[in-house]
Length: 270
Ligand SMILES: Nc1ncnc2c1ncn2[C@@H]1O[C@H](COP(=O)(O)OP(=O)(O)OP(=O)(O)O)[C@@H](O)[C@H]1O
Image (cartoon, rainbow, N blue to C red; front, side, top):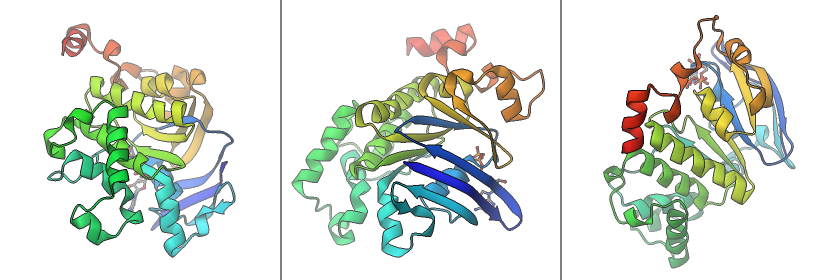
């Protein structure tokens, strides 16, 4: 389905992504892990063409993604739903309008500016909010929601255009453990129920193990591990993170059960 060949991105001498090749043969939930600066975001941003590759190829079915330009490139970007760490919602707009903005490139800016959305789009947005358990907040301003609720709104917005795949760039990095779990469950449902590829940059190993079928480990722009989540041993993690024997997985954890017991019970009680 998705094949990446010798993909490289060079930012003025800084090799952010270095000769990466990988292939996704069927819809999978894939976690990309690695320390800060390993090239995870740049890889995702090349797949949806927010960044142009310096060299290499990205092919999806019969589309040569790496060479798309103009309207074809924008059409491709509509096929990749993006979810960002900071949600990127419009804070003063209500939740349902934020979701409908996911279809912005399919409707005129004039209509969007004046909130003139067709009824079917309003219903579709509400259906998505219902699906992820946030319909009761649909009339609130986006900035009145918690971080986890905002991230689920952002996921609904990404789904509004019925994308072929969802690319999530550190979707839980700003969330507390409870909200991180709900957000990962929502992303997993997109894979399980809609049969879509979900590619998700993550900082935490336990999240990758719990929610992903496959894990890609990046270090210094290269892929240094690509395998099933259950093959992600502590030794492999050390190799990915370039850490020594003092490396502690719990220090990267967002799992409520992996937190110190006093804090864990506080979080569970909320
Ligand atoms: N627009 C840019 N201009 C110049 N250098 C960049 C740009 N974007 C990323 N880089 C550099 O490319 C390298 C990889 O960055 P990238 O953001 O892809 O890593 P990452 O693994 O996603 O890190 P993080 O987890 O901190 O987001 C870093 O050295 C970064 O400074």
